[in-house]
Amino acid sequence: MRDAYAKFEEADVALYALSYDDPIVLREFSEKQSIPYPLLSDVDSDVIRRYGILNEQVKPGDLILYGIPYPGAYITDGDGIVVSKSFHGSYKIRDSPEALLDAALGRAHLDDVEIAAPQGDDEVRVQVALRGGRGTIRQGIVRHAFARFELADGLHLYGEPVPKGMIATQVEISGPPGLVVHDPVAPPTETLQIGSMGVELQVWSGSFDIEIPFHAVGELASECRPLDQDAVPIQVTVRYQACDDETCLLPKTETFRFDVPLDVVDIPKLGMHLGHGQREGNFDAQPHLERLLKRKFKESPLGFVRHLFLAARLNLAAKLRALRGEAKP
Image (cartoon, rainbow, N blue to C red):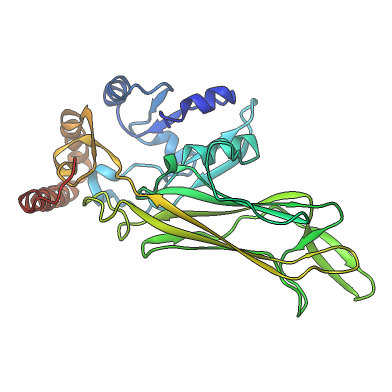
């Protein structure tokens, strides 16, 4: 969010972040990391519970993580009315700043993203772009592939369902193992009545986007080990058939290929996170972790023991990796 803050300012969109961390850690983190927007503290997770976003997959026995919200965002208008929201089931999955900005503005802006060469013809122009994630793939950061269709006047493309012999518009992503592809997101269709066939068809016309979110899990890019490779190939396949009110053009399949860099994640200066080849920041989180552990120990002694075991296991893995010379700064 910090690195994309100028885009929010330019669009006149205000940012606020809510955390279960105490004000001391948020103040120091904000100063060390030059965070330009307010960080709000909700130590007892009261506001988090009130808004129904307490992460229930994290149990009270999980110690330091219990009390965190589901990662996500509410987007409101100037009167504070929620117009959009996006939350994920795991704290390891996060929306990119660009996705939130697009949701606030109501339209994806593809002027500063990686765009494949347009394909199609004068009747149908197809453009595919990858947006979000600072142009890279990182563990848990959701990026978005956009297929933008621009149709000549009088033409339309079909959505599901279609009669036998007609082709519905499809956009698919393929990539390496560990790339999780979400369901496509498409705008509402319009109903087209074809009296001669006695059917109603769902169609798009003009200019519209079909969006497919995707993200990497640990198999492809992990916060617990250095990157296995510098970049991965991603292919976006678009299939469609354009028609007017009387005839249809031949079905077409367009293929767009990207070579997308992988990147590590940003981590605080904290023992259990160090030595795994990630991008280590200048924020020393150890004093704040100790304060948090004291607070959480009172809530869950068993969770405290679990945390110590996990920290010891991660530290051992980092030391073994360092001995093998695998870790990268």
